[in-house]
Amino acid sequence: MPKLTIDDLKRIKQEKSQIFALRMGEIPFEKTRHVLLCSGTGCHATGSLSVMDSLQQEINQQGLSENVIIVETGCNGFCALGPIMVVQPDGIFYQKVKPEDAKELVESHFKGNKPVERLMYSEPLAKKKVIPKLSDIPFFSNQLTRVLRNKGLINPESIDEYIARDGYFAAAKALQEMTSETIIEEVLASGIRGRGGAGFPTGLKWRFAFQSKNDVKYVLCNADEGDPGAFMDRSILEADPHSVIEGMVIAAKAINAHEGFIYCRTEYPLAIRRLQLAIDTAKEYGFVGENIFDTGFDLNIEICQGAGAFVCGEETALMASVEGKRGMPRPRPPFPAHQGLWKKPSILNNVETLASIPQIILNGSKWYSSVGTGSSKGTKVFALSGDVNNIGLVEVPMGASLRDIIFKIGGGIPNKRKFKAVQLGGPSGGCVPEQYLDTSVDFEEIVKVGAIMGSGGVIIMDDQTCMVDMARFFMDFIQEESCGKCTPCREGTRRLLEILEKICEGNGEPEDLATLEELSYVIKDSALCGLGQTAPNPVLSTLRYFRHEYEAHINEKHCPAKRCPALLKFEVDPERCKMCGVCFKACPTNAIIWKKKEVAVIDKEKCVKCLTCFSKCKFDAID
Image 1: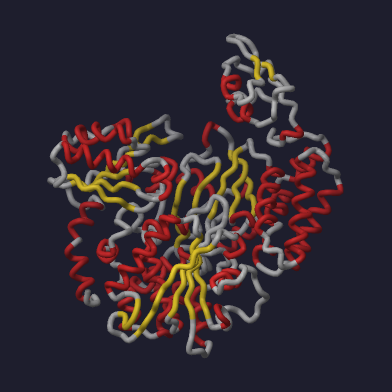
Image 2: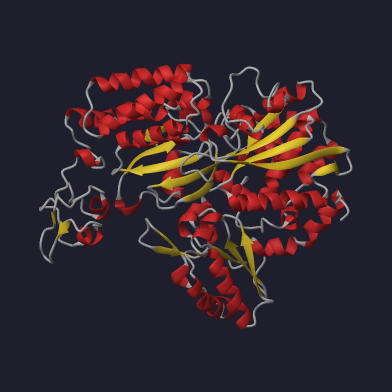
């Protein structure tokens, strides 16, 4: 097909303007409804494809195929409630929809105009108050979506729908109206800093690469995302892949690169499939490939699949992997902007950073920098997971407080438990306790309380979490993922893990705390790359705020959170036991003896200390 021009973009946007006015609830209902069904990995896992098939079959049988259109969108963001669907222009939000709900939805809502209340959202902290409208649900209403502006709204496999939402207008502007220098100046003026974790000014990185003299340069996207509990990049790629491609086109123009690579972990098959489809359709339309927008500028983009090595999130290790070598970091300088991929000037930005670029170019740096704090501009995408009611993907302005993110958007702690800590910055981040919940989320303030921004993983922990065991968990992950190139990381993290395991097993000694601290600072000061340098953060932050738990493990041989099996008695407290039998029913080894109206008893010979009874008991009766 012939390459599209800016006039073609305007035509497509105009043709679909009515459709998106309907999907955004900007026009009243007349004859047509759009059912925006989440089709991200999370909703796929809970059965959204079966829901879609059942809905379509019922719609056809009821003769509504021309009036009710199902749209497969990417990740909606509210991952805890999948499968999710939003009915527009009604604005009705449905959660945990099952295939057997299709008949009632079609007959009651789509045909009878009476929404199904039992499938609507209910606020967990407001006595199950039903909230039918998407726009009224606190999880959505307290966000500011820029990077995620298309989530749950467009079909990610349709390039025309992306164009209708101003897609590729920024690329056309950058290539036709701007020079490399003016693009870089606009990005610098916006104040955007890398969202992959380091927070280095994006425009400055681009300027260094632009100033490097070489006929061959490369632009790379880091979609490796190895942090436990992180799913920001995956969700963006599944919901809006063209935003990343458009960002790469603009970045390539800025530094005069003609080859691009997207490094994505192979465990993301849906993201990779949609990304490849987006690249192919962008080529057909002339937005990628040769002579883009008739400007003489060429850019080819390829996907390079990673095998899941955490260290390949570090830029030099990632580039080594793209070259076909073992993913191991190298000393810097020289920095990638001067000698990167195949020793050519290269820039590497993560998914969220690149997805922000088109809006900066289209709307201007002042628009972008109008949100955020003095040194941290724009918004930030976070993945909420752990002990929080509303697990999902959120976007907030830089400067929002941890308290607002966890309680206003996240909905607080489930099962009436108390908040204990939040882990920010992935496995090499830090644990922040309750007294710092009002800390602003920006690059500088987070560091002051012992954590890092990282790529956006937020793991919330309740009062049943053992902070010593949590440090052990993260150190186990880091030690396993260490590439082994430098001694401080390879041997130091192993020794930290050994000491933490020793403490959790009840064999800790008082001098272990001093050893943990001393070794942690040595590793921070001498490790080769960012992974090793930040590896001790979970240990140092938990020692800083939860030292009393370490001391209880060592001095009293007691785990205050009742999570370390070696330090637990596994007995039922007769005063707290409500004789409900929940522990009896849950025990996988039949180690609990119980009869109605009698206190449960644990048979220690059968007990394997799996903690199932402890986690199921609502009355803290298991010691």
